[in-house]
Image (cartoon, rainbow, N blue to C red; front, side):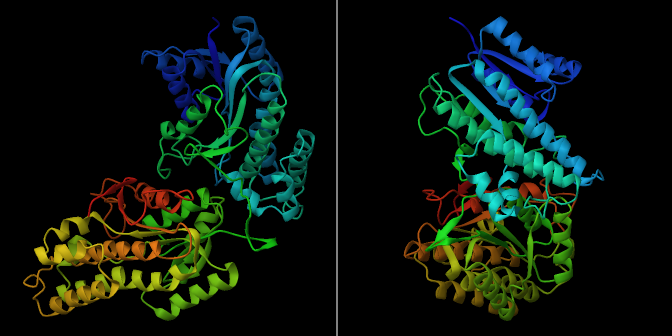
Length: 563
């Protein structure tokens, strides 16, 4: 019996290297690591061999037809064909690059789209029955699609589009980019995103062609690995490792024979997702953008949540802050990275500010889809004792609990079906509740508690703190933690109310981001970055439609934990 054979392009490092490592462990066959630079490729192979794995190597430059044909000939002569092709090789300019946009467009599309196309045209004809083809795309393709003209969007989304038209369109983008006229011709102002639109649409074309092919059960899909630590994306901000980014590609490459309903799709975290399909609301002539909003997000964890949502959420993302200047500066920082957040001023302790935001969302977007209640107040431990405890209690609970409640009361009524609400709590609430009296512990943990009772308990805490009697009345001696007990309990109240709401599938959860380096927590002792702290709230904000058993819970590291 002939061995199965897998090839991963651009795999001497990063996600491609991790895909090879995973295939060496899981595929019953021969796995080829390929790289443009033979020395670097052989070094990568030796690294895996030192781990007890046994990859093979072949040189491949996906922009060089002679190199592509040499690989094809080798596969035919030595193995008689190919079973798994992962088109991973890719390129992106750094956000700070000063290269002219026309150059960026030509290089990026030339490698990511035309290189992938050239490899596919050579190797797809030698894929054997039950073969698997995985094109590594990106959710940047979805974000860029939203920035294209309506006409361009319609053509890219058309599942009957032919390869010739796609090639002509991407060549047109390069031509217009060189002339500085790409935006007025309906293209997005993002070379990498446009290249990945090409990869995604190419996948749909290839899958359609395979459905007519006489060879049995060849599946072609594309996927987004997420924002991963790599030479291309950087090592500090991305929350995912390259190994985590490789997971969905491996999942698709190893789909069992005769898998159904997994052809010509875009996958993220092993789940298929729409290619920026418009959401219709009665009027079939108009589409409505999905909208996400993060409170208190000009810096720290909130800023990182906005950054991730701009990369992974298919819609408009609002960065909000009490200080308009600081908020606008944060928006500009993200725009310099090629992202496109919107800004709206918001002071969560000011009802007029909250109502102005609500009115804006209703007037401009008709509602809201994702709300992350991140804004909070906390005193640094080293200066906490400089402030009277009564001030700490009133300020912490006033902002963290009553501010979050005020925003929620205004915005939850305009959350659309399948909406997601994430309240930023803390594991300090878990610790503090154990320092409450048995009676208060029971009341805060009571899932039938009404909002009115919770409000009364929080006001009573502030009142007792003012006169120095909070401990004798059963409350803990940490103002911040007490405010987060309120946020956690409020989450349970809101989740229960949503279960009785006629709107479908609105999930409300809270989470602890962990101890992260921020202005309030300090920069030396906390072990996590703000980007790592953003991971679980983003996970909850992006829970797929109709997710089960993920409602009214407290999460830490993407897992529910008891209160």
